[in-house]
Image 1 (cartoon, protein in one colour):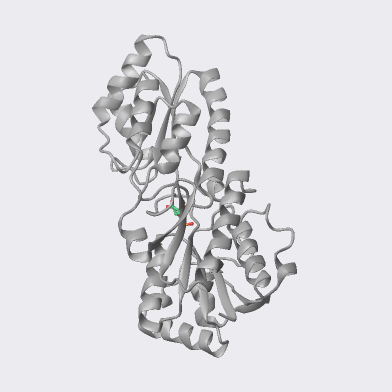
Image 2: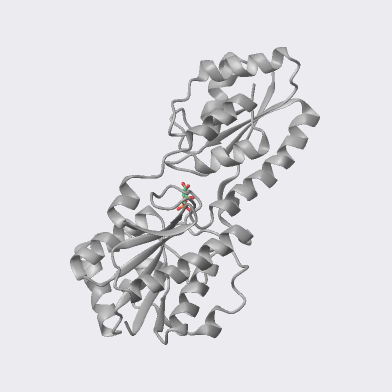
Length: 323
Ligand code: F6P
């Protein structure tokens, strides 16, 4: 292995820069050349390449976003697009790839490896934490902390005005951000795509709170909840239960930015290093993750298909603490 390419793809996540730094510095430690690919799969197709060395990743460990930029690439979903990408990489004599992203990125990397055989190791970088084969994905911890800080502020004003707030957090298909942040802020209810939301049950809970003189409440809604987003659910509740004045806040992309937490920087540093070591030891077509504090490798196939399950103990805990 003499030269590797590295890119970030899909939704960016805080800690991606710390991860790029770790990949580049580990490669340089082993005297391997590094080609940075800008804008993920789009950059592979458009030959958007930059040479990287130890200095290119100075002073980025603390920065959100990704210096390599990111995108979602429709062209890479075509055979022709992937052929262009493979030709470009071969012209650059690249013999290994590190792909940092979420399930969409690994789905792309899996097909690309099957068609063109360039060894690829994936690193889980997404705020959603929805990949199988790692306890945590890069960016998740920071996103949860961002939500907690924002909701604490909303709690102040909710309390001052005796209001009921529905707060929507990210998670198109997964409730990890909602669950962990919901417990962290002491939410009265947490609604996630993985479990069915019953509006009547939610109203019964709010009614109970109302009866015991609760003056304000916070409901955390994952954007992909089966009963709809925060606006839709607030409307359904208001139609049957109008005791509280109700407000909706959608936190949106604020959750994707910001300086990564210490936990994310450490995770990113470990995984970036492990990905390069994995390529050196001949591994390919796998995602590297940390489970129970140990580095593990999971095939792309499994990582994207099996999605990590929501922790039932945390779901139960949220229920008990929100009586
Ligand atoms: O990064 C994953 C994710 O945050 C999802 O939870 C969310 O639905 C999506 O990205 C939003 O992506 P985009 O920035 O393309 O709107």
